[in-house]
Length: 190
Image (cartoon, rainbow, N blue to C red; front, side, top):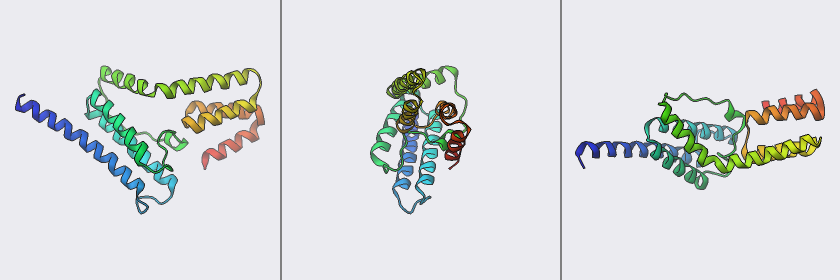
């Protein structure tokens, strides 16, 4: 193997190690009681935003295969290393409003990244589709209270999404009218 290839491989390996070190630093700060935030909600937000930033920026540097390995490593490490109070699997309402900038990648690279993420997310997507179908069946039978319970299960297991917010507003209108929508909006603001 030529020296230039070894250098490129070493450089890529070191880039991967840099991003792994960032994740380890985030985990260490999340575990530390004296770290950047004592409020658990603030700590969770800071951790999740840092995690998302690291994933987005690593995506710009690593190859698709390296990135897929990096995602798998990150999920495994966060699953077993972070405190249970910091749940990275279920997005919160605050996470929906967080936007990080990312460099533009080629169309082919974007498609490969998206396909890889869809493959990795397949079980969660299937779970959502199953619960969504259950929700829709209850709506068609005018069983709005049971439908709300299904929405609660979606929120608890899969986290917040734009679809969930819109659907909650719609069902709150049907069940309790404007007053119920006001309660939900107040809950979203806290």
